[in-house]
Image 1 (tube, rainbow, N blue to C red):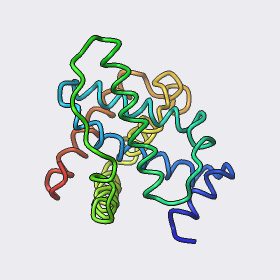
Image 2 (cartoon, rainbow, N blue to C red):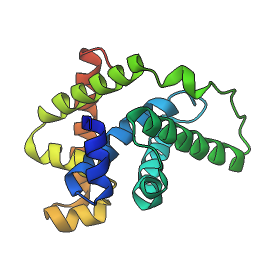
Image 3 (cartoon, rainbow, N blue to C red):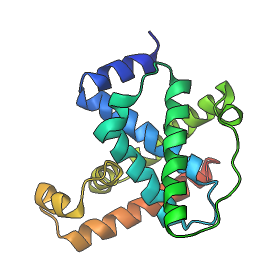
Length: 179
């Protein structure tokens, strides 16, 4: 079994670390898929990516029948597109033309996604410990209210630290060529 298959197997067995890793990768991949929906605001695209991850945690992983990374990414991509289309139809927005799944999920794109994730991890590791923790908690959809309880920090402070962390990570990713 390759690394992805091991992670997938462990996530299906409810291993928290594997599940967290799989969902972090899923969030990054969905953000990139949703970037194609340039008529949607960036914040909306980010929210949609988070919604896809929540769906994957809730029932998507259980419904996923594949075993390979390419199958997983095709599954995620379709879920992200469906979330965006659903929102756009509900808001009566223009629906863009789409590209085929085969055009997007290639060995080269898989390598690029992995490299982007590695760079993201590197950038996040440069954050101060409190910002690092808050950044990953938000990626995992931990609510501000739960973070206040867990961290014992005021919600405004958490929001401020998260915003600073986002800006630092964005700047770092731009510096290494992943914008």
